[in-house]
Length: 583
Figure (tube, rainbow, N blue to C red):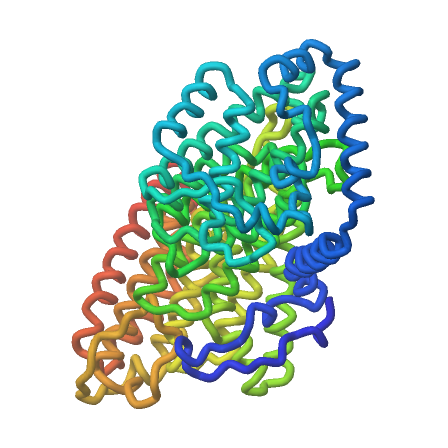
């Protein structure tokens, strides 16, 4: 990845409303290409598909008919029992001609104009119940085929494309809902019933009946994805995503549909309009897609869709975290907590992804330190960059500790080696502009690094960046009386120059210092070297308490010094008991 590929969009000093840089600010040109790979491939494939439909001729259709008849003959020889069943119970399924084409993958014909104009039969509740009864009793495929036709009508009811043809009409809202719910629940069961592979756990593509049912499966999945994109009711959307997850093993048989499905789920997972229940359900579906094995006959990577899921989940998170405020922060935190779960599936692949994107953060930080331009500094001092640090810190917190190998022995996680570079990026971010205006950013990053200390059992010297604040003008000088509202330190990275000398800001800064030092040193209370670790900091804090003109803010720091000295004494006593003569 090259620095030349950094995005050219600028970010203003305001950390919320004016943060306008795109997600490509943290990605190389290659990574942006990978981000758009799914979309470009889908557009290309859709254009090719449209051109193919437009150029379809009678000769092409005749070839499809001949191929279908050939497949049926092969089915007759390979599975005569199943063929006899179709002939007796569902004889209409064996008749493939132009009039039956609309249930097939290529179902529109130029000669069907009169059929389109004819009035369609209205689906009644009694007729629907009759289909459902047959499907539940015997998995009757003729009834299921009729149900799929009704599902197509329901899923594409708002479709205005004249090329889409329907065989039935739905007027009753209750019938509409029942068609949707019943099809969602029956489809996975019926398809997998007829597409049982010889070996348990094998892909449906390994079934001898795959060539016959393939077009029905593809038609249903296409309509299902269309439905997911157009539903607005939160409860129905959650139910649809939940039932669609059961079709994952079918979706991975169609590469283009699987990618469209992933894009749809990513949109539901990240959309500000999605409820938390829909967001969580969409992520569970993404995770199922990531761990589902891909049929060996497909031209796919060994990891299946895990690689593309990891990349696009991260890029989607980056894209939707640039506007941070009290309303969006809970959603961002939920997305981050969910997304980190994917990185526990395959540690080697997770390491490769994390290495690339942490390195890209380092490249932008290096450019900002080297060039010292407002543009480069704003590439780092914005919410997207900070949330990226938080994201990878959460990944390392969750999976950077010891892990079990195949033999059950405890080994070091591959991700543990990324703690150091991420720490260097985080500390470099603090030091880039070490002014009082960016104290909120400083303490946010310090909280992030403290969590790394706690979860990865890594020593990171952080107290120096807090003592540096206590030695600054904001903490030492007498503050001015100013009004205003309290600062929300969770949603702010930078404050205005007018308030940095105010009493309210001074009190908040000292409060943050006390919390940061206490949380940091709690991690080392049981360390044998704790007394020596805090000696210099205790002296620095006492010097601050002596010379600072702040009144209210010094109380918590005074109590912190007492607490540290008490713990220091306890450790020395315990150390003297266990190791006599080595105080």
